[in-house]
Length: 465
Image (tube, rainbow, N blue to C red):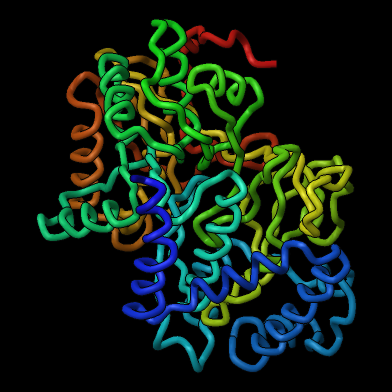
């Protein structure tokens, strides 16, 4: 029956909804990307360069920030004739975006922009704008990348993901329920996971019998550890697991495959651009979506020198299709290592060997909660006036939250934080909030957002290599 619905959804319901009702071109973009992935690498790079040149010309005409910055440097789009020339343009940082938010909007498109906020996994929540076309293209790229792992429109999928914060209205909850039902999707809130209710999560999975699981890494690993320790086997056989939100280590992949009996695919993305890279059928590296993005790997301490294959570099991204609020050479704070050899699958998209950054520590409490570190950036992105933050756990019954305040932070914002933490963790842990002028970076230049200094419990896979 699920195969019948999948076919019906993919061929009739989704096109009617996406193209007919919403008047979006997601399916047209998906067809374009499906074909482009098989082009030879040099053809994809030429296509990428053409798209970049059009974007740069647009930015110089329409976006005050870039026109001003490039004129200060004595540079015009016509001067950028090679990738080496492009790499000499200044990096764009979160601080630049906050300080020049209005000037980063294209003059002719500012009235039609959509907006999102990042979860602040580097400690700095960020609001940004994007066009509808860029959003639809990002969705198409996601479907392509997830499709390599066997995820298809209408295929029975379970998301072990973060739940919403606040109190959504009944109408909003009903809308979400209908939307998920239409997409053959069920969402389990990983923020409510405790040591005592791990069995309930597995039971919910058994009832739903998903063909694909999409999950935050840490909570799914917690489930897998519990399943192997207790001998609990799933009553279903998923076709695959797609790991997201955190880097997936090989020992974790082995643990998940042992517990769930299916292959696990790794992905890499960020909220500013959605899916940046993902594994194909071979699972030997993450293909970078260079027909949609320009992704650079810059040596630490430099702004223009690129890391060599096999060498870790800072991730710098340009969205080739967000003409409304373009991010040109945006440093997102992550580190990744480009692969030394191409994938043998035949796709012309280059690969990453691994993603180094964004490891968020899980938080534990005396009554058995296991809260993924992703909760705090997810929740704090909703709080006006939080510029930076760091959550540190030094005792099982206490959390210390340091906040760098900005305009708009008030008593109501602090009350919201306390209410949301209590709603998820109950009264078994004390939350201490303090306000600071700055939060120091680590030796590697990163800000660890969620830090657990507790001794880690032994896991079924042993100590990671």
